[in-house]
Image (cartoon, rainbow over the protein chains, first blue to last red):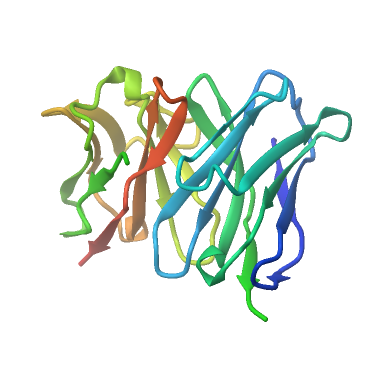
Length: 116
Length: 111
């Protein structure tokens, strides 16, 4: 059973950088795309971006200027950095796995509040 | 900016059938859009239901099915159960830009 677990600070100050990690507890990190997504309070899901196991990335155009996704295959984990956060970045952040356009396993989600 | 549109809300009676749709602002949704569908309930992680337009995961109940209808991706629930009350999101792939875009979600009420 593939299990993904997000981790990181639950509170970030405005203008600072949000950093989250997603760890894979079982299964291989190779050959997959790894997604970051979020759901803001009262809103729908938003795709943030993805990273391939070889490090290739794609980002949502609306967030591209502030997002960096990286991967550490040796640790079976990948990370999200979102700079210059505002209250609009308050959300539950999810990681997930995709292979050949099949999104299957998700993490439980990490709530992040942006507030001073 | 690409927009993916879903019905904001739908209501269905227990045992009934309902179809949720997913439209793209760029034109007809095709197989290349590789539509995925997810179920989201409060306090729970999203659950993957459908991938590649019509393929089910091993855990997807048989009453859920995916298709293309009238240039849109569609999710049909047949024999709806009370436990199907949830929000449903579609996710479409845009190969030219190599990005994915979520629909706004459909809140399904079972009454």
